[in-house]
Length: 248
Picture 1 (cartoon, rainbow, N blue to C red):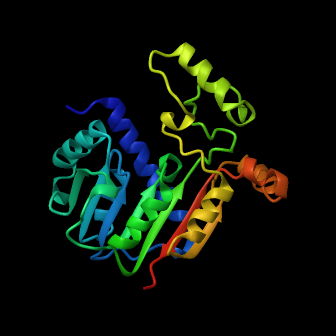
Picture 2: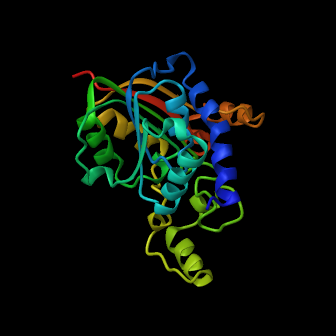
């Protein structure tokens, strides 16, 4: 049975997909007849979008069983015509051997939760065909105003950056039944803008496209201006969109 909240989130995802592709500007990929991996597929909205745009095979992987259950039921009930194209799987990327290499890997709003990003990029490189690309868009970054995704349960912007982790963890454990040992236990990578740039640069990939602060919100104009000031860049850069190319 499909719950309304999951269906609402899926439908919201369909709207966000258009924004996702728009933010790559004129670098949008040709999806026709491509084998594509969606890393962190969640409710499956992006996988449906990829199939609609002509992908030959779409593999969506995630670790959240509840989300995958929705994705499979929704695919069967509402998008039956794509069942032969889309395959949703509960897979740990780093511990999975894929039968075929992919033309493209897409990942939306996942890297800010990925604790071992260098290893993930190494695996991406391994499972991509020569000339394959990664299309990644994600945020908010941890040092931005809402970079904790509300998970630290602090009510003011940037407070998760200002306060010491030790204090945040103690406060969280006091107010919740489930205890954490570190901020990363809340599913937050804590990578900074500087960290992401270094991780991408140190990977085997060529950075073909890299842009930050992509948004249609009017307030983004102010953030974009402030992010140009060196000592404010970390705190006013809220998302990243990039394309990574496997040349060899």
